[in-house]
Image (cartoon, rainbow, N blue to C red; front, side, top):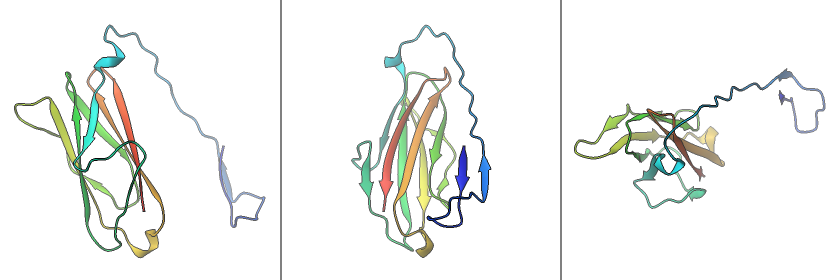
Length: 132
């Protein structure tokens, strides 16, 4: 159940929506070791903190590597962040997108950025970092 309130002290929700999701279970002959890997242009680790300045363009290149074809790189990101189209890097097993964001004053505070690469077999890997 997802609910929002008029204030932090309110106990009566303005709205309430049930959360539903679908789980797809399938059989595969490939191992988990064959899933894609993700890297960024900056030396980041999962859970890294990145400081972004209000009014200045922040860009990050996300690269997915796989023995398969990368079907998509999806993002969970702040409002206003844009993602380029998925591009294969010729002569490699790498695919990339470029993320761009110019935060506004109303966005001051912590944000979570998550990326997921999904290959044509449905294997995926996730990576998250925190922006401030």
